[in-house]
Amino acid sequence: MKTEAPLGLTPSQTVGPYLRLVLPWPDGPDVVPEGTPGSFVLSGRLLDGHGDPVPDGLVETWQADPAGRFNHPDDPRGAASGPASFRGYGRCPTDDDGRFWIRTLKPGPLPTPEGGQEAPHLDVSVFARGILVRMATRCYFSDEEAANRADPVLSTVEEDRRETLVATAESGGYHWDIVLQGPGETVFFDV
Amino acid sequence: MTEPAGALHARNFEATHERLDLPEYERPQGLHPPMNSPGYKSTALRSPARPLVLLPQRLTEVTGPLFGSERVTESEADLTRAGPGAEEAIGQRIIVHGRVLDSDGRPIPDTLVEVWQANAAGRYRHKVDTWPGPLDPNFTGGGRVVTDEQGWYRFTSIKPGAYPWGNHYNAWRPAHIHFSLLGRAFTQRLVTQMYFPDDPLFEYDPIYNSIPDPKVRQRLVSRFDMEHTRPDWALAFRWDIVLRGTGRTPMEEPHED
Image (cartoon, each protein chain N blue to C red):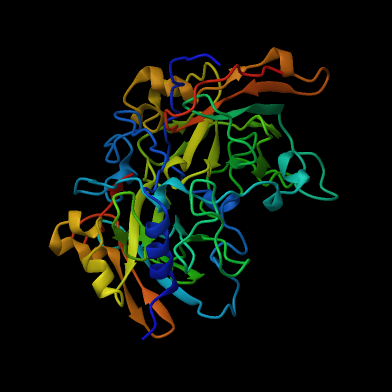
């Protein structure tokens, strides 16, 4: 082994208007298959700085399983439990009205290295023409009020902007819009 | 009401582990384009006006989907064949290959690489691409490959053409191939574009030039690779992709094969 200067990172470029040529997958929105007990649909719209729909975007989600675990070597607690069909990852192109959706299970709360606990959440990436670098945000759940109040990330966000990160429970699932700019602008993170 | 299973797990974990030890990915400063880049007009309404909030890297950020060969068929590595029975696409055949590494020099094995591009005439097979460049019935323009255990990827295609776009008067995009990489963690997710050497359109392109540092821009330019051309068949271009590392693993001797 030898030590060398780190390699130079590859910079980002926009996904452009033609991502539909390969990025949508037939099962992309299915974090779990249809009919999985406890599954629901999270849906919303991707909106630009004029409040107009973004019809050529892609929304991706990544999340823990209902036990708050990840099937990944960097989760030191080991493999996830829960249904084997749970993928953790969702991907949905937006339609002409800017709509996206995923079918998933609610993730469990997560321990933090500082000994605290994070409220159930999804990490979300947004791509579109005009977006030069992946925009990262989080989606929490409106029916987890106590957990959300104690969440170490939400508490770093200005109080009047926190609701932009919280999906609203509605019949059959949750509703959550992503606003790229302007009034009601979603909080985006430097990950 | 019963306690959610996750809370129980979290408590049990705290009881049995001193500390949750997670990797920490480097946070590049000044590497990527600014999200609002006035030269590229579509950024105007699609970039946040408020500053980004710093997100500590915890479990959700340091993990990610580990998709590999199970999502890919062998034929998806050849963009010159649109499908069974299709004729070969028209254009200059090229082999594009390289390695996916993290910035510590560690290869990223069995990771999904998705690519898409215009045809040899610079036309995309897409409803919103309506400029009068010819479509090729035998070219769809999408492909998927996975990296091998040393992080190598490779696909066959035709060299895409330059094309006009509506950003400003007489705007042309340099020839490029779009790349999407999942990496191994949410922090590593990258969508970018690969360009070809010595393109005269570089200096006019606001997307290429949105990257602040001219030396960093050049990391997106593949190099002609004579050694990997296939005689009497195809040219070759080499392009390595470097995702964020953790600074934890010393660089090992790279395998050149």
